[in-house]
Length: 129
Image (cartoon, rainbow, N blue to C red; front, side, top):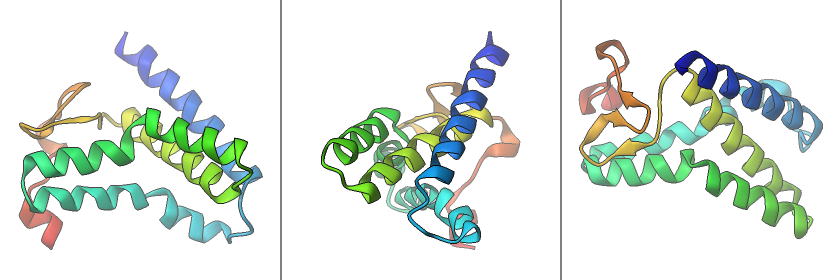
């Protein structure tokens, strides 16, 4: 079942990347690489504490927030907001492929997909370095 869910996320990521190529906002392709990983800046919330980190991380990795941005951007004809929503959705799907789910306030390793393995952990000293 876990592989089936991962395959579903691969499909959503692929569709999102395709849509980002259509709605590129005339931004150079190499810049999209950096923009794609920009939601991970939200991990800096863990420098405050686990609860703040989980709230910040989950806000930028929640597919519901992404879909709301897509819908609002689409209906108001604000292409930037529409593209941001696609980007957030695609990034969240990509993260779930590699096992990063929404975080619980008990720590970065506690996700809705299960506990992260030791090789995927971060601590505050890694964020600062």
